[in-house]
Image (cartoon, rainbow over all chains, first blue to last red; front, side):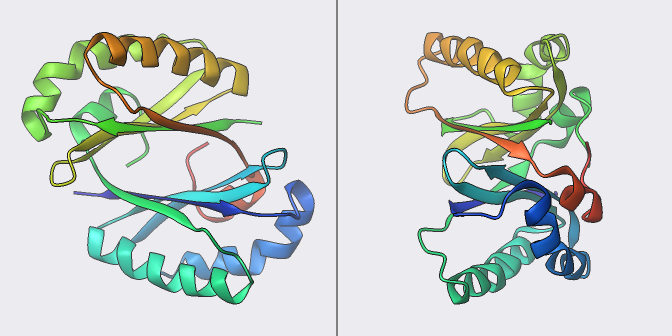
Length: 100
Length: 100
C-alpha cells in the first residue's frame, strides 16, 4: 500500500521562480530516492512556509527519506520541521482521480 | 496556480475496505466540488487518524470546500480537524513527476 509523506517548515524564501532556480538540482536527485513516485512542492510566501507532499511505495522508504531530508534541512538552518506519514486508501482515492 | 489542501483528524475507523464501504458515496460527491482535481484518501489505523490530500484550482475553492467538509466532519462528531492550504510550485513539481 502506497504512503503519503507530508512535510512543511518555516521558510524565508526564495519562492516561485527563484525557488526553482535554487532547488532544481535537489529536485532531480529526489527522483532517485528508493520507493519514490512523485513530489508536489508546496509553498506559502505569506505564511513563510514551504514543504512537500510525496508518494512513496512503503512507509519504511518514506521514513528513510524523511530522515535524510530532515538532516539536510537542519544543515540549511531550517528548524521546526513538521511531518506525517499516512497510508493511502487506494479504492477511495481511485474514485477521486488521485494519482497512484 | 493550483493549491494543495491537507486535512487530518482523529478517527476511530472504519479503515481499509470497511472505510471504502462507508465512504464511497461521499467520495463520488467530492468529484463535483468546484475547482476539485483529485483527492488522496489518507489513513493511519494505528495512530487513529484519517484525512486527505486534495488538489484544487484556487485557494478560494479549497477554502470553500474545507469549510463545507469541516462542518460535515463536525456533524459526524469529529473534532480537532487539522488543515493547511499551500500553493504548488509547479516547475519543481513537474521535475518530480507530480500529478497536476
